[in-house]
Image 1 (cartoon, helix red, strand yellow):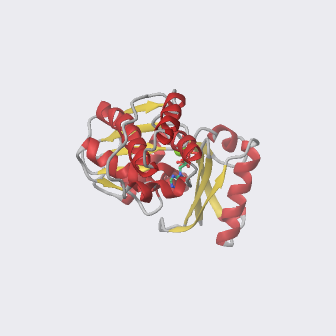
Image 2: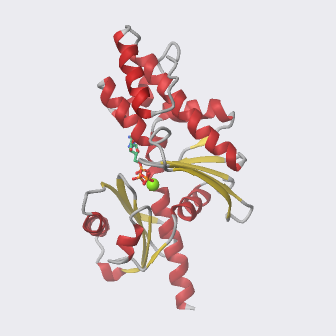
Image 3: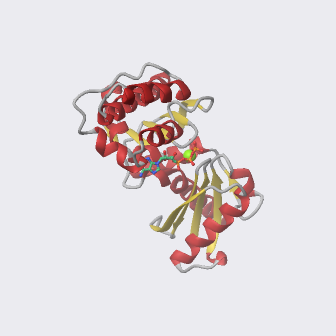
Length: 264
Ligand SMILES: Nc1ncnc2c1ncn2[C@@H]1O[C@H](COP(=O)(O)OP(=O)(O)OP(=O)(O)O)[C@@H](O)[C@H]1O
Ligand SMILES: [Mg+2]
């Protein structure tokens, strides 16, 4: 039997399929389309296809993420919050994880776990784009660079151009002025990573940082943000091989557990 986790995020839908031994058999990441329910059904179908499975091979499906209600009213058996799912996935991959930092497309969260892996405390920023993936997407556009390349580019900076505004819209104007004044874009990117790291670090400090620290969500793929955040919090940050699927992985692990509880 197989178990699935579906993380319906504001920017991307992630699906993980586990076998009975909790081994990852397939996963996928697809853009969240305007028709969120249909997009999540499609993403789930595609992942089944990749694994060569039929819907009836999957014993239990847990949905998480901002669109979890839509998935749960369609094909998923249950919905569980992102906080719980990211925590579960991070602890599974890093058994000594006590702090999880999830930075997605539209919000960022910091979570403190206890010895058993339960959530002790969490802090969330879902009011403002600064400190989220959206901030970097806007800046990549303004700078004419690929979002996926910003991390590596910033590692070559000589210094960090100061970005003083805490608002995405004003920070974008600052970037444009810096470019006009002849500042090297590489230094601007490093400055942007420092700015986003400062926002995320203040969130992490609200829950009390304890190592190991694990970063999840799509923004963890940006090595520049990870390094800048390590400097801010003065702790090493562990990044899973595919940080974007950790919430879906946690959901699939919970699905596997729920199915075995139901069977006994
Ligand atoms: N290769 C990459 N390099 C840098 N950033 C990336 C990369 N891939 C994705 N991202 C960033 O990850 C973000 C999406 O991450 P994720 O899938 O965790 O968000 P989400 O779960 O949809 O959003 P939320 O949790 O806020 O609802 C995008 O906004 C983008 O900025
Ligand atoms: Mg997310």
